[in-house]
Length: 416
Ligand SMILES: Cc1cc2nc3c(=O)[nH]c(=O)nc-3n(C[C@H](O)[C@H](O)[C@H](O)COP(=O)(O)OP(=O)(O)OC[C@H]3O[C@@H](n4cnc5c(N)ncnc54)[C@H](O)[C@@H]3O)c2cc1C
Picture (cartoon, rainbow, N blue to C red):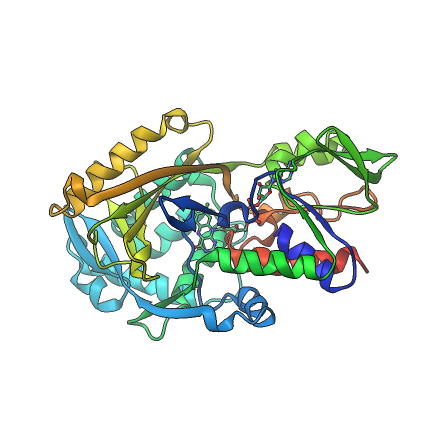
């Protein structure tokens, strides 16, 4: 989002300076060296509705690097790998009655066709889903997805937010039977590097390993930022860091605004990436409902983007305060190895070429019913200061396209 702000500002003739805490650009989309393979720390796919993302690709002449692939989904349930993601798979699914299947399918179909999210804004997601799909389908197909992503927050999630996630995937289809998802040659890094170059070409500046320690505010006017112990003067500051960091670096905001930021909840992720000698499954998505696995699913990325080795991501989401988040990386790596061997018994230890875990403390806001009303305005009651993160495009879920679209609009709004 920060890059998108700078990209728009630089193209509009301003001189943005991006301060990035990390030693590389990209935040959640950044790549790392996975024993010789440059790849994202967290998996990314694109949907055909990702308009803001596709627009930037066009502007940067990267459209030919985008590929759309028919992908498969699976469900690991009752110790079986089952097909998933189309009406036939739903009908054949073992472990659910016919009426429950019908209700589940109807809910997914209607959610995909729906456009108006306002009536769902103040409804809690679990009540909404149970009302549509019934208790049986909820228990089998939904409960674990919620429990292993949102834990104690499950009972207080916005139905509008969950609906937007169902819709995004549902709309990335050729037909009722075929899903198509997209990837970029070289992954997200291709876009990040192109945006980086474009910002510099238009006069913008990107400073890496430069965490902002304070946004300096005097008499309700922004004066600049403190970076590396130095004050740097700016007449406008646009912050796109995760909202939970905001009170720490902007202690001089009005108390009411600070209180609103402090009241927001966020979940963390420990994401394991595995390089395998052979496939785990044929699916891109694999939902899991297994009492021995504390994950809602996994992503076999190389079934979307062809790579020399098989790459699988396993995200463990949890509240940052959960004791599990304090466990060492090895605990997550060991779990993943045992889950994989259970799902595909042909896999042996020699098939695991490499495994890593990456952590992001503020990976996803928890969007409660009426979420937008809980947020302070993007343009804060401080002259020259704008603050946003992925929360602000609620009910859309966090995503590259949404962050780009929101960031570019924020840049325009800040300069009218
Ligand atoms: C596991 C996982 C899977 C995902 N899958 C997808 C997907 O399939 N498709 C999709 O579109 N999106 C996906 N996303 C989301 C996507 O990565 C984000 O929406 C996208 O990166 C936009 O993020 P952002 O720029 O808004 O925030 P972030 O990526 O959180 O960026 C915030 C930046 O602020 C920097 N920062 C923090 N504090 C400071 C400071 N004090 N000073 C300076 N800099 C600071 C951070 O280093 C970071 O670079 C996924 C995310 C995760 C975690």
